[in-house]
Length: 486
Ligand code: NAD
Image (cartoon, rainbow, N blue to C red; front, side):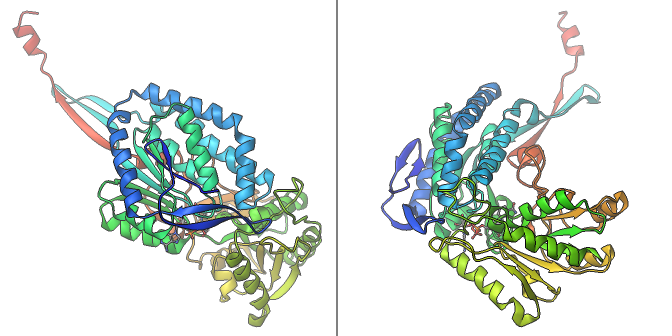
């Protein structure tokens, strides 16, 4: 099967080279994705430009009505979408349902555009003068997305951009193109006019063309920090508004007074959910003081019970494969070489299917801050354990990292939670929450090398990002009316 581009409301197979799309659980090719080029981007920009002329002038309640219908259709097709996510990404069906549900919540949020995009006004700011601000769409916006959330991350972007009156070009990850096409088809079924949402599949060439294209006003990117920085630099140098979310290294800090049952569930979910392939994955476990030995024991016992299986066949699997053979090889190497630097493999699972891109869950103890395994994002089911003596030491160690996405503390102490919340150098904090990923009305608020730009994706910052502000000052002197004798 070939995954077509979607341009001007038509499904198009470009004449180009193709990449492979796999079912990661089985290691089998399920589709071929076009690696489109500059001409395909040009065609999408032309379609979007034409659509923008009408869509940007469409009354806001009519735009919202399309989004309401889209939300209904997404709800009706949520299970089918989740199955597609599992098929091409490999996450468990329950995780895929979460991926879709979180995306639908953004559409739900965008339905409120009439309120969200309202401006401000101040009558009589000077004699006979009133001031009004208006938020207006930018034009054509582009979105470039990663493989790990095939539904949610694209839905962070285009529903808000389109609700604001923009036209949009999406470049999904070439590893998971199927969900994106289904999302576009359902939007069209909901009544979105042709050309308002376009999809150009591909890799670097499409990305670089979008970042440099004079027809594009803004670029939203989510992916690794290396590419986020590249996209930010390139698109900014071409005068575009850019928001670029990058990678992460997130701490799970367990205090001696943490509630054991709920903390264990949260730590397991944060570290091994989606096979560790979340930008909010907990990848560093810090058992403070006496908590360390106890947590090592608890974690190894729990990991031995984790069912790692083919997620497209087994709905009861707790964990699926990683995305491709390159990721599998890289992660296995990180685990295997950890002891060379003095760390200790506390647990390494090997009970998983032979075919497919599986990596057994691993717990690496006695990791030190100077080790690469601590400093770099691994993006797999690998949790590093550090043993800080105090909360101060734990915070200082984490704050050496270049990333700044999330961190969670597990404690019964309000004072410890407060100190952690205020002193951690990152933008999303969990208190007794393993994956503190903000819900739709709030921004996805990475700091440092986890985000390049100013306004984050999602929530009200998303609305600000996809609109620009006009300030109108009007002078109307009522003496004129009296002079007319009216
Ligand atoms: P990636 O950076 O490899 O790819 C992301 C996108 O960039 C894809 O569409 C890809 O085609 C494109 N791309 C890849 N290499 C490129 C290059 N050299 N030049 C131009 N474009 C290029 O990321 P991924 O492996 O798909 O996703 C995993 C990464 O995404 C992790 O680092 C994860 O932490 C991050 N992520 C971040 C967030 C966030 O909100 N900050 C959310 C999800 C994922």
